Length: 365
Image 1 (tube, one colour):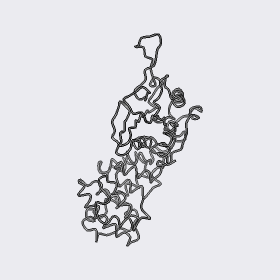
Image 2 (cartoon, rainbow, N blue to C red):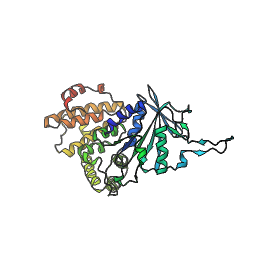
Image 3 (cartoon, rainbow, N blue to C red):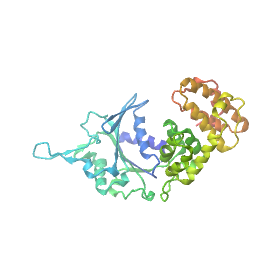
Image 4 (cartoon, rainbow, N blue to C red):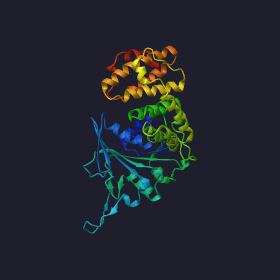
């Protein structure tokens, strides 16, 4: 199940509080999808604040809580300890603040309790999870009625520490397999301000988005591109990039991406294109065109002021309008779609865009 469908499914299952487990290869973004779905459920422009370790997303229509528990670091004692301080003839348990207990008034009535890396949990912890999922209680304390339990986990064949899941636990939840989608990842990456060169490269080489290989020390995953490659561009010396990228995505993918960066950095200056959009040369090589889309959209997205971004976007539009004359109009669509991800850049803020959309509507995405 791809990310966009998974998010829709999560929202649907939340209405009936059906527990869900998402399994897939490491680094695909399983837990990120769950977290982002909680934000989406809060409505437009959610604001986040923390109540202990629980995130609260407050949007224009709703407030949603999100509690994430990383199971490989937990022991059974982290699910409650005997309360030896309160007097009386019986001993109750004291629960940790990550548990959205029914009596709590400091967190929203609706939310998601996410158990991360569930498949690495010990058998004893899995037994506790089974009870939380089925009875919706922990040591006799009810889970808030509006909260849903979701788990994520790697597969055993990934050799990432995942073990066998107890059959009675698996029987109490719906289990789906997570599939990486380039379209979904690009939407995430552009919203998260992942460097445009990485986005452009993966448009060019989509098979390298998620080529996880359990037998190699490093291989390409959506997480490694977004966290191990993109933040390093322009920060570390160019000569150090290949070695550092190898640590994140492996030798082959790193070598290809460094080659792509050389193309991008060797292009006619994007500033020259913006200065003379009507006469600047148009590349014909596919890899160069992908690199160029990243360079131009990056200038617009990273412009210091909205005024500068609007001017650059108008000039870029003039330039890419010429791509159709050499049969490469699709790269103009990619460039315009990418630069419009800048949140304060409205489509109506520069002329010529409606006409561009009309001419290329069959390619818009």
